[in-house]
Length: 46
Image 1 (cartoon, rainbow, N blue to C red):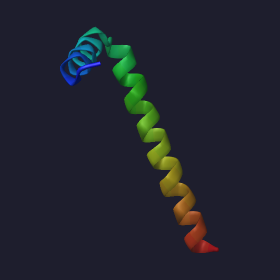
Image 2 (cartoon, rainbow, N blue to C red; image 1 turned 45 degrees about the vertical axis):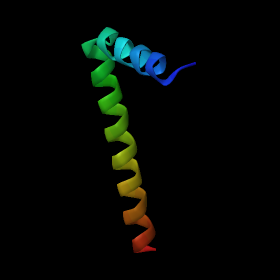
Image 3 (cartoon, rainbow, N blue to C red; image 1 turned 30 degrees about the vertical axis):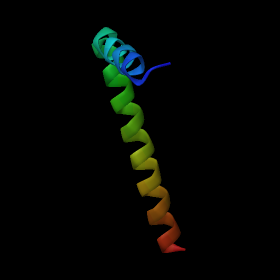
């Protein structure tokens, strides 16, 4: 599969993404970030 076709499919997928999906992705990223931050703080205390 040519690189241009992969890029076009990626852009089409981004354009088709709805606002609730963007919010879910951002919430998931924030959750993982907060969890890692919380765990690293706990490890430093031990």
